[in-house]
Length: 377
Image 1 (cartoon, rainbow, N blue to C red):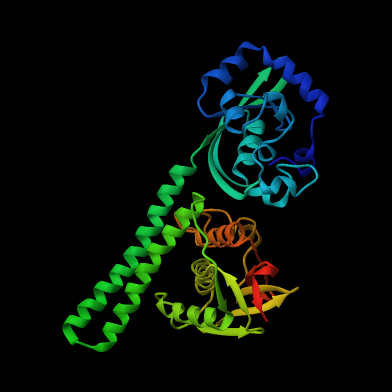
Image 2 (cartoon, rainbow, N blue to C red; image 1 turned 135 degrees about the vertical axis):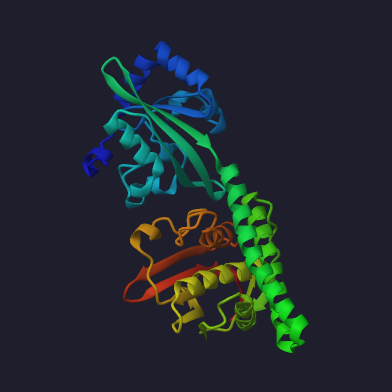
């Protein structure tokens, strides 16, 4: 990849406008902008926009192509990482793994067509949303200027359907296999323990279906919030019961800490789903015999839920841990747990979701709700 300094270089707005005028009447550029499907951008040597096709302008509801001149892809698409550095898109630490940046730089250095995919988490007026794109970067020289034709295809819906199907079938198959085994054992022995195990597995099956339904509704912005008053002890006792339902995790040592048993007003289904996903991720990251801690306390007067495990998240993984469909386990179609925690906790419960991870202190995911969710202390 290019040096850090060259990635940060930006073309002045006056030069961008001059270059844009040079290429806008070029017959090759006109053909490119009108004949290629997808979102089409013409970029300068510093990956800044000189021109765009009507489809992109219309989709982004921009008044004219001139309103986006000089921006980079992440800035145009409101990528959360494009604001993390003064020099904008492509220059924050999170950008090192960006598929769009890698395709652009590879096309510039190799002078050959490069293809790839990228995932962009954006922050708009209604909060966070995520999109996945297929990309093609093609070098183009107009007069003395070395440019890039950058074509973007929105593949979010396709990826969404494929990944949801994989997750659902994976989880359903695991539970149904276990149900079949315990059902066969019950038929052979009549053991009451088998009945209890089957009951737990049926609950887990229902839980799997509900998880998918919630995620689909949340992604489509159709999820309705139902607020109820609950105390923390009730929430945590429910979570302890839920842990027993999780297949394969009964051997884990779960510690529960409640510093303040207060009454809060929140959506029961969402708070249980968020804490469940935190616990599942912690269980999967924790070796046998080590403990996980589910904790509640007040943080600056706000309700704070957390799940701690002794493991550590590598830096490369930490940058993308809340990305939709990114998995720390390297399986296609996994990796929706942390994404849904962020989506449900921030967009629907209006809280803050984050994590800390160090070798010395382990990993802690937490949800901080707003102060006005407290009913009584």
